[in-house]
Amino acid sequence: MGDIGAFDPLKWQRTFDYLPNYIQGIPMTIAISGAALLIATLLGIVAGVMRLSKRSYLSGVATVYVEFVRNTPLLVQLFVVYFGLAPLWSGNRFIPMAIGLGLFAGAYVAEIVRAGIQSISKGQLEAALSCGMTGTQAMMLVILPQALRRILPALAGQFISLIKDSSLISVFGYTELTFAAKKVTAATFLGFHPYVLVAGFYFVICYPLSLAVRAFERRTARIG
Image (tube, rainbow, N blue to C red; front, side):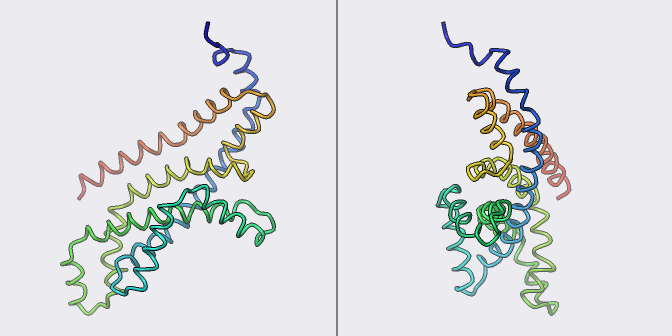
């Protein structure tokens, strides 16, 4: 007969005894994901605009950043950032981890922003310039607001991805959801049950966000 340990109610009971650990990890997961999204959005907008710059040194720097981040593993990047910046923050894990996740997601946001800008008709830029605006003013006041409206669903999707990617920071002892599962495993010697439960928590967090993103996409599609 196969192993029925996965369905053993006593093992599930032992796992649920540590439910407060998971509850404690939920706001930590959301907090670091939110901080990383803020960093990624700001960095991504700057890098996305730089990618389209006619100045080769600006587009070159942005391209190197985007391609390097997108072609190296996130966990390796987190190690580099953590061991490079953690001493600057007296052992604070939140700041370097948020920066690491933000740098990673920022490269993808940059591509989203670049695509959003390129989706705006060139005629609008030409019209803004003909009204006496500088290139910077036209980008900030005319092009970017329209582009950001179009890419909001994609940015929301990136936030969902960030929530899932944040599970990697459990390696550094940050007390988010996955680290809570690791602590439960260490305390109970159960491997399957704690991680099934933590997967359920991630689903409960991410699935409603996914539904909201889809609803927003449908609404924006009807509007414009």
